[in-house]
View 1 (cartoon, rainbow, N blue to C red):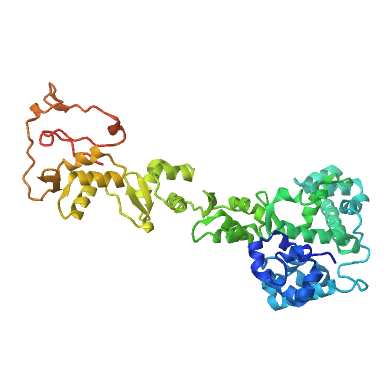
View 2 (cartoon, helix red, strand yellow; view 1 turned 180 degrees about the horizontal axis):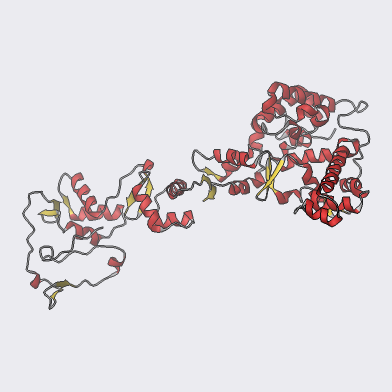
Length: 494
């Protein structure tokens, strides 16, 4: 016998080795023995019950959502009732017993009847030829109903067909029902056994979700035309995959909503690296080569910077996801760009400021509060903090050095705030926070003696500021010494 275990167990061909090896590996056998070693040699080395046991463990751990007939298609012939149930439903002991029976019968001497060798099954003939024969004897009306309604991508309505052939809708429905019954009877007989076996293999090949276009290219003959119907063979095969639902360009085994929800649940605890996410989704039966596309098709999930992350509806939660993946503080502009949706910059900035999940860590950068760190409060407040750390009095040069090193603020802005109201000099180059009982501010000179101050004819004073690059990037500018008592402008904000 030259069959390996993966030849009779389709899920072994699309399940990743990282999932299979921990369960199936054995020091007495080579690596990936389920693909590299003939089944009879593996059973001779380990024992048939032990091989069946490893297969049962894989079925419980990796393919519990699949029916047994998809895990081991030969069960459809030996135990059809159990083949329609899942491993989770039957339990490990029953699954082990069923697998052992199949393997023992498969390994019987060739003189005895081999499981699956059904009389009348012409496996030597091409399957499109067998399918075509089913419809070769149809009359024009039956052929049109089969082509335009049963196996059409855009199904004709009963009324359209009834008008075309001048019969009632019920007559069209009856012919359609008879055609279905004939196909089901053919599939149940020996002539249809090769196609039934192919569909069983196909379920394992497709997995629990696959792009619908993959069906046409699953095997070369799927693209062949059926002359009796004038349609490609894959379109007929599609109707036999009754347990698959076609949604948004995907064929999904069972319910698409259920598989989508299971996929979303994998990422509720936070972002996952893409490679890890693909392995997790493969545990749901999605082939690894299409897992990333499946993830991207699931609503409220997104692939971002090589990670898969839950993508909720609110901008706050999206910003949190972007920061979690980044792992470092970002500007509102960077967050807006990575979200990539129609959210205003002002709205994002407001949410970052108001939501306790975020922490302002620089003049224009925000991180996640759970990361910890020091909150940026504005230049004036940061100067106060530096003075408190120094024991109530600090060198202006030291304050400038500390703040410009840690934050995106300019030296001129820090010096402007340090020389303004709220701080007082204690010695040359040192300042402290001004006392609450300090005397009212007294300008050093009259406004009329201050440079760049001018008086208009209506009596108002004007101060000229030459705008430079520092101002354009947001830096402050000190007010003239005489301005506070004679003007109405408030101290500048950071």
